[in-house]
Length: 280
Image 1 (cartoon, rainbow, N blue to C red):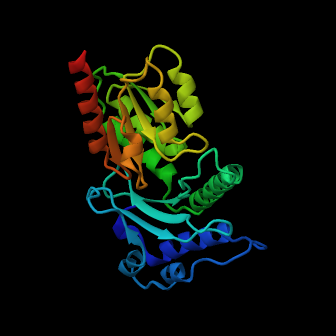
Image 2 (cartoon, rainbow, N blue to C red):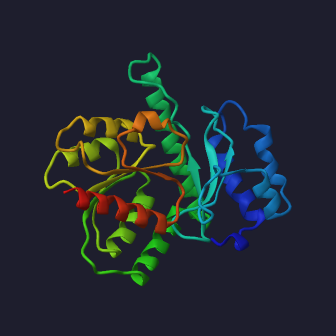
């Protein structure tokens, strides 16, 4: 949806859907009081003013507005309005924001994994409810990617890519755009599936790896694949909406801050693949 078509009433509707799913009858706790100011917004400017605007340095064609509301079991979940891949088009999504550093050797790890699974199920319910009410979601992003792919088609045959992302519609949209540019694209929707694919030949020429994933996150996938001599030089482009410790992903070939416009993605992929060809 174009920003000029997004009204305070639609913002309130999206927030009300989120609240109804995040605090159903019988759920304990209440939303953060300051997050509810958006319900009183009279103008779109007021509504966006109550939200946090992206990180400094974000691409001007990839604006991201977030509001940390939480849910009945976890205080860090975020309500998100962002411009991703398609300049000028905005979509609602939920950021589970569950990348806390709780390692497998922690006594809290099992409970943390269960909470992450619950958060992801809640995220899906909220986004599906938005779609049913006609609010702009990643379903619309996938449709727009298909339209753009048809208009921007390039039949030049290019390299093989492995795209790893648990956001199914975002992954499908990316795949449509990249295939239209001549890349052979395979999809994996979690870290385990990605590692299983990378255990087989032929290897992809580049991996586009999302950082935030259930069970095995991007950091762990990167660590494991670099232990394999077959994969130690494989270009990996990591995408994240979170602030991450770069020292822990030193072997990554490139980093994309989400959301990003598609031309930045295309340029980074072309640059990394060009460097790979030159090194052979």
